[in-house]
Image (cartoon, rainbow, N blue to C red; front, side):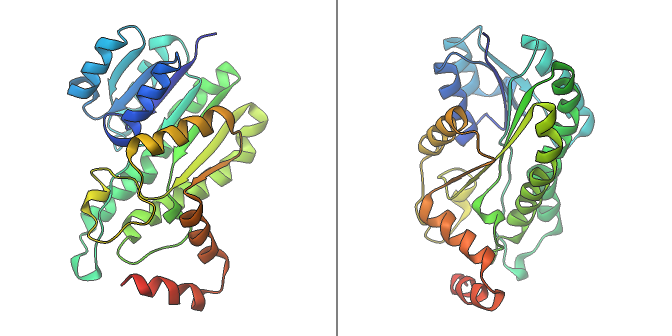
Amino acid sequence: MQKIVWIIGGSTGIGFELCKFYLEDGYSVVVSSRNASSSPELQKLSLRYPSYLEPLDMDVSDTHSVEAATKKAWDIYGEINLCIYNAGVYESMKVEEWKIEHFEQMTQINYLGALRVTNALIPFFLENSKGRFAFNASVSSYFGLPYGGGYSAPKAALLNFCESIQPELAPKNIQVQVINHGFVKTRLTAKNDFEMPQLLEPQEAAKIIFEKLTHDKNFEIKFPFMLSSFLHFLRVIPYRIAFYFTSKAL
């Protein structure tokens, strides 16, 4: 049986490494980013897997782009079994450094883009009577951290959105999963000027995600253990205690 995955945000970092894992496992892969078709890395990978990798340009902040690309992605192989939403942008800002355009961009890509893709792809999944979404969120979706609210707020919204649609889509044989992971060494985290606990290489994170998505059917996939457990702990304890801990990050 043909296995088909659509990876959105797959030209660099975790998404690119996921492309390689799925290709090695025999999947046909559609990979999207704003400039997927001109990505040198994806072009090289296409030469190794000429019949199994299809780059497809898409701007997740543009509804028309998403709708057109979704139809093209489906038509390439005739269906999609798994859609991984990995697109993301990040800016760390102190209050004195706030720029509204950064907040808007993070909301557009990290949250609204996921909604656009979901809205465009669900009719195809319904017609096919099956489908699966995996949304790459963040352990920061559990609790807002200093300087990172522009990033964690839309990630928290994404988690909440997935929680709300899971009961609706499960009876329709459409599975929803959320990936909440910690720090990964990418062009995004390169902007941080603080020590990042349990920092992972993109290939390490992608391997965990690939293996979990392959074998784990639970709603949430989270790692690394210590960091995700601590931030989840902040979510459930009284605010006055949680703020004591987060103030240490200032």
